[in-house]
Image 1 (cartoon, one colour):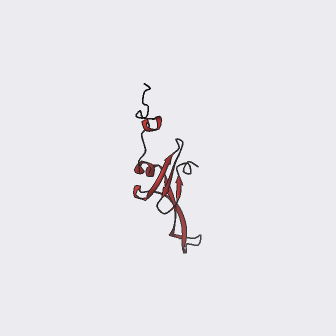
Image 2 (tube, one colour):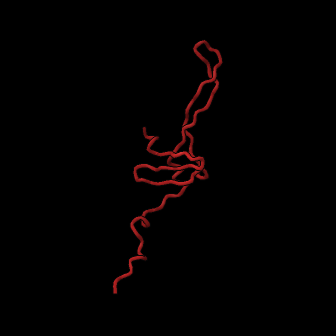
Image 3 (cartoon, rainbow, N blue to C red):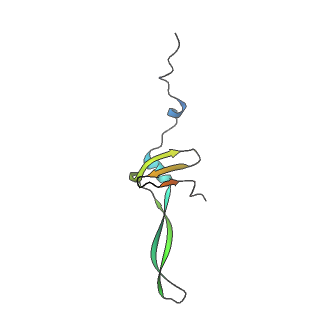
Length: 87
């Protein structure tokens, strides 16, 4: 009688599955904010500043680990990749 192979774990099952919190730690969102600054004459002026902000695990809708990078889709529909951060 042939051996039943349906109960043996596949290679994908043997690999540790990533959680939403682990995926969120690997990507960051770029945020642009207005800050108070001064121009060359010393006059107050509003300028923009971009910064990287961590993604919370609660924001993650879906994720995929490609081995070289992680792609996360947030609840607001943004697609973020850890490959973007290395550039």
